[in-house]
Image 1 (cartoon, rainbow over the protein chains, first blue to last red):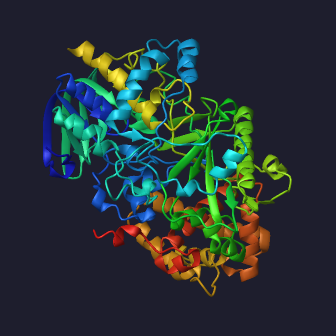
Image 2 (image 1 turned 30 degrees about the horizontal axis):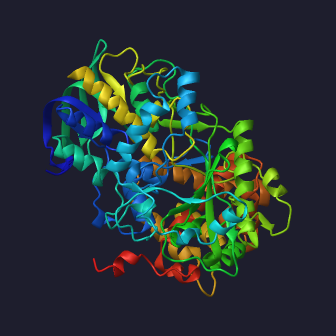
Image 3 (image 1 turned 90 degrees about the horizontal axis):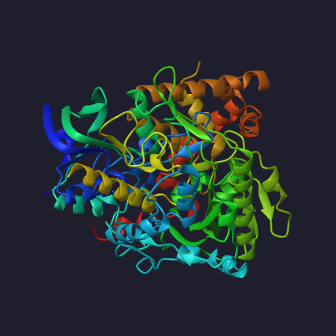
Length: 488
Length: 127
């Protein structure tokens, strides 16, 4: 049993299944496993290609072009946030940093209290998170590659921030740090290595290179899903249809079919990440490391999570600021750079996914005061850790070279312009564009429909504040079980 | 209007001027970009072409000449001005072009000596 390529579809091919799932990432794959385990006939359609570990070259640009949405160029319309998502079998789980956090209890409580979501309290979710972690082998023992944190971790310790190694879903990780560009060794337990084969063992089928373009709707019922393949067309009739295309493509699918009501696509949160660089003249970072190593959640109250990050230097170099000789002098010293990312829990709903007048995808996102404060706090905390760890200077994540020398005031952080295209915000965690209880009912069924469901990060009523893969797998598991109960 | 390639060449050389331990941007970027464009859809290619033209003619009101006709010093001044501009569109265009050029530049093995990079380890992993 293997994943079938859509290239093998010639002409029109028809299928009749219990459930068709659109998308094979952190939402679709666990849903497929759960529904197939319940004895249902499940077909997963993935728009992207199936890229096997041995096909990953560790050449960042090649990988980004092959496996990322829009070849890695997906950004907000004003260029303020680069929104990175995987587009391949396994979705973003193939190109993420394997970071495994559960949804914090206070966020689950907020969803119950402020958004009226039922059956999602910490006690209900804890065993589901434990199951997810087992499926994907989330561990802090296998990933002993903290070398990338060797410079920054002492700073966290010195400041009393209680750094811990992140849990990661890996088996036999070698610490090559090319995680963002696909694991060439198959160590990362992304969906293509975990939930999808587990679901296929239960009878689920997966077809890659099959881009769903149209839902055939009859009253309140989605009768058929139509997907374009390289040489043909798939027509899939299903009793239930699950959208798991991620927080950008799922709302677009709903908008294109006038489904889900006026709130579809609004409420986008991105978790903007910014990463001031620390420069450590006396220390040389190790060449072997996991991509994400140590983290501190000491600033959770301030809406900031700080993670040590280590990326291949051919990728890192492009983020070194400045132009001309100034840039080159910095790039030449890239050996002395250590990086930490401040993951900011933005205010929900600062962004929106829509179609513009020409029918093109349009993503917008605008900082509010509260989020701006968190971003500046995040940069400040990162700078403080760098200096406590012995960095002699910190450069800010702007295009221009903005340097703070050791001992100097951190005030340039407060003055740094944060308008469109001023600094480099990267988002790996788009979410919230078809929220539970608003666009869908409590069971993730799209309002106004009888058999269409959403099972991806679009469902999050407010931002989770942590890396989204385990959260989405757990929510998809919960919702898929409810669906299975209804269908059997 | 000069070709996109000419504008990209001028941009890449300003971003990465010739140096002793790394090739000039123009040695690497224009060919790599052509290769990339071949795989991109028409809309994206058009959009990039438009960004390049806007960047090229944007220099006229500020420096009296198109970007590619400026001296090396003039080009660098114009790039710096774009980076710090109050106009979001001007910054966004600069940011997009810079990101593209920088990624293409450092993806080329000829630039790796500058950053002390030995290349992907998978090659040595006996695969």
